[in-house]
Length: 365
Image (cartoon, rainbow, N blue to C red; front, side, top):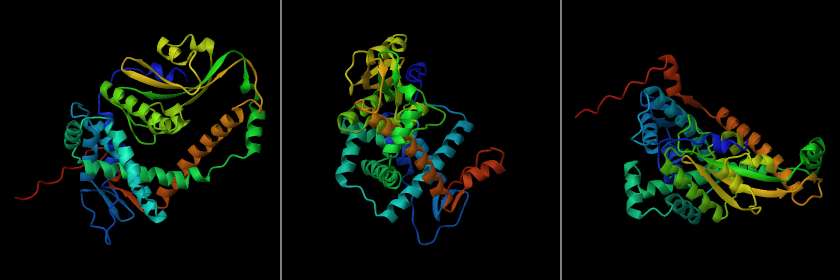
């Protein structure tokens, strides 16, 4: 897994990372619309979620905000992206509604902090101009940030707060995997966050963020380093932003990597790990892509047992991450299953054998 952040390095094109939240959530801001009586379904209705409509216009605006105008995807690629985005909008709509039922709110101070992190020191004029280019105002952006924070709090309360790892589970895991803790050579326990300058067919991290140009990748790395300095956990950022689906789902964890293997790695990655202090985060860059590498620990050869400093905690974190990944998937699946959801875009694409839905007629003058 060490190679993940390096082999995939290559060129791509796309949006500024300052708008990562816009791409993953701002686009969803129009999705939660509670009205006493749902409006009638029309050709412009692309989904209905518990009576709340998500329209073609909502999805189109979301798509424009998350794409670089310089890109020229095919009609099929555009529709696939919009279909994926619509599915994300449905889920966020349900989470926002659930937040209302749970009376979850976000303090203004948290919104301001997240907004400033998204702005990432871009001058006010340039920031406002870029927002306008994407059809947003600063107030829109703040609402986007608020919605994303609300959904994170729902997941934290409904999923994270319900996960517990018993001491016996840790012991059982250790006994079943004792060989895993016999370190045959000097090794480093590392974790990674991968940022590439090319767009993935379907982002897999929890925010849907995907840097798509070299500039966006650099901005994203800067944002992540700022978040780390502000105290955000590496694991949370990896799950939210890493562009490697496999390690990202594990909070970036790559486990123990022997020095002999590190010496065979590309120099940038090797130098980001060897002789670095536990707890340090270094950036390995090549070809426009970047890997943030966390040195979790530096291990000497020998058998570890549960009295080894930090081992019990690391096993607990591993078991907790597994449970959280499973419970999150189950929770979101159940949330959607229990809702009254009709995805009209998907239905129409199936009925038309993949033909794009007709454009709405121009308004009468």
